[in-house]
Length: 481
Ligand SMILES: *Cc1c(COP(=O)(O)O)cnc(C)c1O
Image 1 (tube, rainbow, N blue to C red):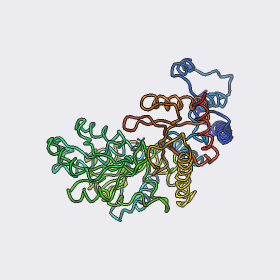
Image 2 (cartoon, protein in one colour; image 1 turned 30 degrees about the vertical axis):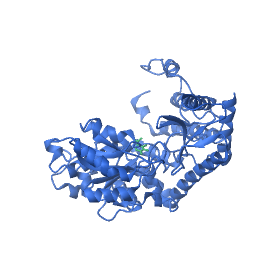
Image 3 (cartoon, rainbow, N blue to C red; image 1 turned 180 degrees about the horizontal axis):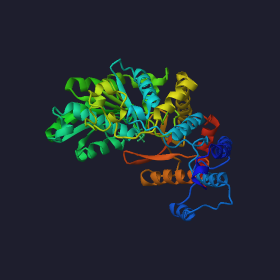
Image 4 (tube, protein in one colour; image 1 turned 90 degrees about the vertical axis):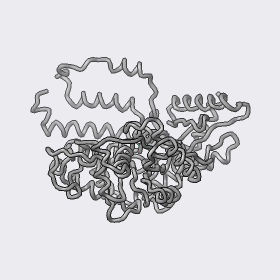
């Protein structure tokens, strides 16, 4: 294929029609439960399948569209099928199909967004989306923030800003003078520990706070944890609350943490990667009470909001803090006015230089569906979780690890005749493996206080009550077989 043909709009139309047809058929077979949720294959077998070397020149007798479709068919066959109603595994959203079309447009435009002139409307859309998200969590007029690629990078960004604000000197320029720490529950996502270790604080940089019987940070343990970190020579700069935690979906007590942070002049960061979306549900937003007092919040739009991955907001109660995360200059990019005057040069405030137009997807979906749609979407996911919890409570052979607080539930099968300890753990592991291999459902597992549990996250609004009944039935069948 010649260069001219590759960029020919007519070729794009032909390819596009074929690809759209293919993806539509894919969505149909997902809805009909006509394929495996997760087609299980070994890494070695897959490597073998993709062994053929890249052609120097593809077979010119075959039309371009055919080659493209053949490759994408193979991709679809070996991917996790998130639109299958049996997808109740990880926390990645089931993308709104229209959002994928926005992403396609975004990819075609590929405006980079580090500086205003490389992504003008994208930048202003980002500001509007961030303003909306800030007001949803209850922030006032001085708030602001940025979008970044994923909750892990988002938490790192917020903690960098916290360090600069709390260090007592210009730590960005001068480097760190003393070991620091953040107080965080042992249920927090591992990216918190990774962030502080990347800042050079070592394993004790994430100083553990005890949790209660529902896996929430226990605020009565905060004074002890603070004293202990001080005694170990740590400068404690922040408390991180999870809203909610990853394994069990537990909401840390944000109001109590906010009070503690105020009393001790600590930064209060909320990792709301998963649960901050509840701010858009009139019914469930109470679970986030206190989040409006956080200095910073991370919110993944690619979890409960149905946007394709990755798409994450880092929000600051005081927008000026967001300039402190990366307080360096890049004079070839940015003009030398004060940073606050340059809200439109987003690259000052993110790890990324070139950045995907994430806000475009959020902006277009908020316009297309209206903000109330997102509240209803969240309510549906939460209610499906309640339905499953009710079924488990009513069953004699299943038990939950703790009451569901979000759309995440940990439970296990505990039939008569299976002993405690390792035998029970192995039983869960076998059930999960065989269930996933059956192709009917995708669920995951979690270790809680040393024990193995099955774990589901209701991400798919197409999952039904009947599906959930079948889930328990299939687990029982596998247990007997
Ligand atoms: C998912 C999750 C993260 C990580 O976010 P990514 O977007 O996967 O990087 C961080 N914290 C919590 C609480 C999460 O649930």
